Image 1: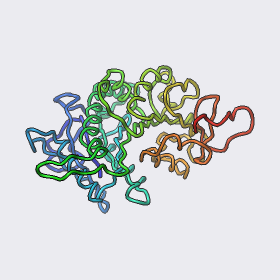
Image 2 (image 1 turned 135 degrees about the horizontal axis):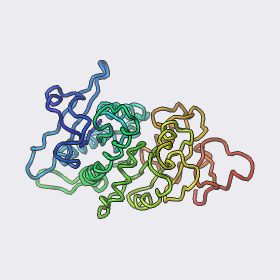
Image 3 (image 1 turned 180 degrees about the horizontal axis):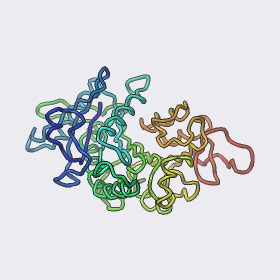
Image 4 (image 1 turned 90 degrees about the vertical axis):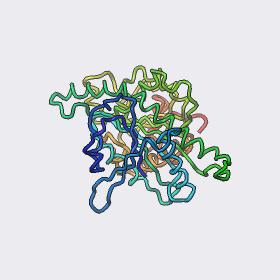
Length: 356
């Protein structure tokens, strides 16, 4: 089940055709925090997308997201939808169609062998390709960086509404009303945040602008995946983000996309080998089998241990059990990260991380 939250411009022609043309590549003309919600489904036979824009006038007393999530909760309780949910934030240069495909590919790849292992994606689709095609790649990248700043407030709203209207009723249950009986908490419910590449700049700005400061959101996992942000000061905002959930940071020193970004920026976090000092668990995939220079570890790597890590990260698996040699990682004390692969001999191998 794919739910789309977006602050992209709404296209009238796309509303009529109910396809991927519903949203454009620029910011919503009514403001960066003016969100629209749609349900998206891909026809397996034709590959075509069908979007259903959620009516914002269902009730004058309720937000459309509240109405939507109430129906989602009912489907979870009826066993029609898994209790595993992921809010995903895509990276740089993604069209609206690209963001739909990324959400679909995540759900397809991480179906799990049982329904309670399947994930459902809530995609925050932000205008990371503003102005369409720009011939100068550096200018295009800078424009996307600028678009990430106003989108940070929109992401905060998405997380808050998902927490209030989906997570809280699922975790606490629901009290009886005049029209319904009391409902018990949903077993195995989890809510994680997966942030890819330059999407991490959206999260960084969300933290730095204190958009979540007074909230009580608590996510099962916050995955900062191949982050296209500065390494040198990431501790400043990651330590604050840690209050909202356990933070996982992935690393691949050979990442081809981040090495290009590194040429016009300070060192990128996703390829860092030093300065790993935030309140987070770092997982280093550099040199792993079939990892190579891949930028998207969740979708682009054919490696059973990487896939197991990703499946666990997306479904709320306890973070203290994700490291360790039984999971395919050894603790590299010299840099402060879990390293994929066989523990090498010699002094660099370090000791087992305390508490694991």
